[in-house]
Length: 598
Image (cartoon, rainbow, N blue to C red):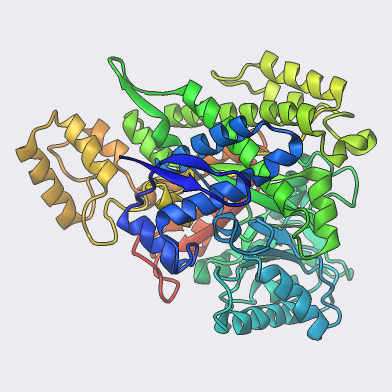
């Protein structure tokens, strides 16, 4: 359905937006209940507001008005049809407040003095709807600082003045003298505004396995295995802490050779590392929306995926540019100018696998995921080079001595030696040589796999790279993509389909329905029905040290209530051996108010 509407806003000129945004009822609820959309706005108003703001900076770069209108129209079409979207803080803020459009930032705030000035600094970030990253290594009593920040966040949330829930990451290095108290910080007290994690090293994990001692920063000697057991015990109890391998994240950080730009914490869900004061802008691609049917079955339309990736990369760079004069602190502005960091993520991977009849826990699915995600990563980098040619490179390209793109082999070492069927070693080597020779790169990092909770609902897709969480929707009916898959597999036999769906509704699963072939049942496994190792293997394949994206993946392994502390410990050790950069677990029914049963 088409509708000619005039798009006005910060673009300056008026033009016709031909697409009409008609979100699903579930998406409308997310927009309104999440306060992403203003009470006075229609969904169409919302779309126009966001698109107008994102493309308002194009004029400053000398982009012809006709091309601006064409790109804005195309971007709006992709959003309206559920192909791409931006991070919820971007959607919330764009054209509505004079705020930056970042999704998260490392808050460069000194917690040594806890006074009104400290509160105001934190408030200036939170009111911009950013998630916050904190590191507590420099404080003698990190738990006290953690509790104080959480209480402040709770007080601020209670005012009702914030559109977004205030979420933070609290990170502490495993060698801190208070590490045991920090591990247990959420065991006996509620802290809803923090995820907590322990920054562990490969040396620590080796000592765990060898039953060796580690030295804490104050000289105390303790068995490494005792620390890991305490982590596992608390994670079994309440889902926290998670493990983060910050040294692994810094190996893939192009500027980690300088202490000023090395990562000190992460985003609240641990999908990206953050240097002091660094912020990041997020955007998401619904992979399933790029599936096309053919006589040979479902296929990815890579030409269309290329176009969408190029446009999303440009839109996120526009969002960064728009944010430059709107960050709450000068440190964040400087870091944005230095790195111009963005995080293109995905959702709908499980939907994609269903369309291609691939079990989530199969090696074929993992290789397919590598193909698609490496393609997105490569295209985003090529686009960043093109943007740099027109707009100039990020400031980090002026520091070759600490820049791994210029004085190193970042792309060759990580990607060229692990090619995929969509991006060859030669492709990566050629791109790396171009960046090194010309010094042209607009964005230092372009890809990460965030959890996409609300964004995946807006796009009507499964979350991030996760398997099906449940075969049911929140109202108890079967998921639409599950019904479509079964209908195709049963060749439209409505009677058998109805019988199978009734059995699944009663049993809560397809895994014991004998009338379905094993190959079909394998494709319909939910998160709990997939072995923990298979969860980890998927993350390792796409986002581990030999993965195909820049940063990490937010990953929680969901366990049944019957899981043991040793099960949790085994997951932590497996994550270490598989090269993951972070991991957390959640055991069913261990959180009061759990949103749904696993």
